[in-house]
Length: 316
Image (cartoon, rainbow, N blue to C red; front, side, top):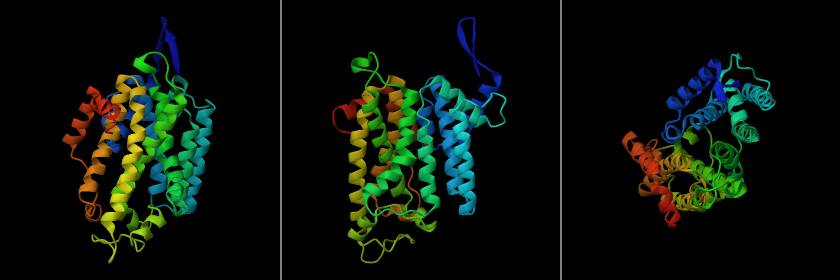
C-alpha cells in the first residue's frame, strides 16, 4: 500500500482515495472531534480519520433501528473484518475504503487495534440493554467505548519525554488517555440523558439515581417529582471534572500538534460540561451544545498551547 519511490514513502492512489473517504466521514459526522483532528499533520490526520470512520461504523450499527439479533450479526461481521485488518489481509483494491485506510494506518503507526474489539464489546452492551449499578460498572463500559479510543489515538500521537525530547512513558500516557476518554463519555451521558431515556437506555449508575431520587427516569422536560435532579448532575459533573483533571496530564507528554488536537477535543467537552453544570435542567429540554465559533475558539487555544499550560498549573 505504501511504496518507496526515490527514497521517500509514496502512498498509492487507491489508499489516498480511501483516506479521503474517511476524512469526509469525519468532517461530516464528528461534530466535536473534527476540530481537533484538523490540527494534526497530514499522516496523523489521515490515521485519526480512519480510526474515526471505523468507530463510527460500529456506533451506527449499535444506534440503528435494526433488530438486536441483526445488530449482533453485523457487529460479528465487523469484528471479523477487524481481524483481517489486523492480519494485514486487506488489499489496496478492496472495495471497503475504511478497511483500506485503517490497514494502511496500522502499518504506519503502532495502533493497539484490540481497542476496536473493546469498542465492539461496549456497543454489544448497548445492544443487550446492559444497565449499571455502580460507577465502577459504568466505568467499565466507558473504558470500552471511549477509553479504548483514547488509547488507540495515542498510538497515532506518540509520546515525548520531558522538554519534548526523546520518547515518553507510553504506559503512563495510555492511562491518562483512557481516563480522558472516560471524562468525555460521562459528559456525553449527561448531555444525552433524556434522549437515551427515550430510546429505553439508562447509563447513569442506579446507585446514583436512587441517591438523588431519580430512579423514575427522564422522560419529560422536567425532573422526576420529588427528585434532586440538580444534585445528581452536580455530583456527576464533579466526577467528570476529576477525570478531566487527571486526563489532562496527558497533554505535556505529546508533541505540540498532537497536544493541540487533544486539547481542542477535550476542551470542547469540558466547556460543554460547564454549560450543563450552569443549567442542569437544560439536558432535559434538548441537546446541549457549543456553537461553531466557540468550538473554533477552543481549537485555537489548543494550537496555542493555552489549555496545556492551564492544566500544567493544576487548573484543568
